[in-house]
Image (cartoon, helix red, strand yellow):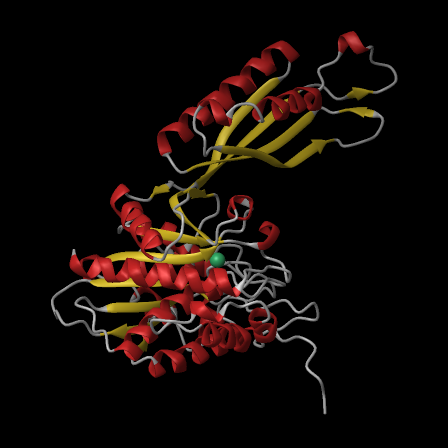
Length: 433
Ligand SMILES: [Zn+2]
């Protein structure tokens, strides 16, 4: 008999405290489902490969659809391939409470990013079924399509379609990693550009959205806490900065007579590290991409382009930080005698989580017997897209060493199950509002 070398369920259950399986929430079931999903698109490194609109993503959605039915949900798929499991509420006219995430992954990703948000949302519905609790408001568990975007270099495709944010003409021009156009790929999974546009939901149908997600950072680990309340989702702004100096011979140009674009750029990179905290405790700025021309060992750099990724959960401080970086770039250009050009090439508005939803989540955390801890989300999620239109909250689950988008991504089952309990309390409180 062949022995199974990778067994996620077994690994998860190894240090599980079974006392967390109560009130209809089952850690054993959650571990079993995380394990079953991990088998779809399993890579040689025991990671996960389920690109958006692939047969693997389709298979994972089908598996979840079966579990949704088991939990008593009415299952449907919208025109963008988003899977929706709906539980009727006692009040037919009440708007929907929605929770979920995604099951697609980056090419060699982990087994928690996305799937945990889907399975905890489902676990709440299943716990209600087992305990005979009927919510007043309808509840929907959603699996959004193509969140990661590694296939078309985009992402958040399903949630954008549901919110009516998609630019279908731009999507049609995209090709995937095999050079295949977007519409052709949609066709593989029974969708089309036409159905895609029909995925838009009337916003008045939905009251709010909540997403459980792994932190993908180390804050909760440092605080030794299983989960944390997200204060806001930082929107990225990319600033393209180009310094133009004069390229010259590295040997024949005296040090006093140079217009070195890279020296100017390096001064800016250094300065940028000291700027974010002046404007907001959650702001960050990073230079991760730089092009040097002509890029020769014996040539003084004549032109340097660098990209600054600037993020904060608050738009005001983020804009002030952008202005300060531009002012600093010009100041350096004047003293280094090189010219500079700065332009914004990409900008997504940040989404602060409302004080009310943060307070509701805090109440749920305390009810479960945990210590409330607040933290920002530096990365974008489906909740960011929904949050531009509807009240949205997030609950982060501790990530081992902050590792994510990697086969070694890990969250302990004890932490995952505690998050499911918090989500359940949060959604039950929302029934009485
Ligand atoms: Zn994710």
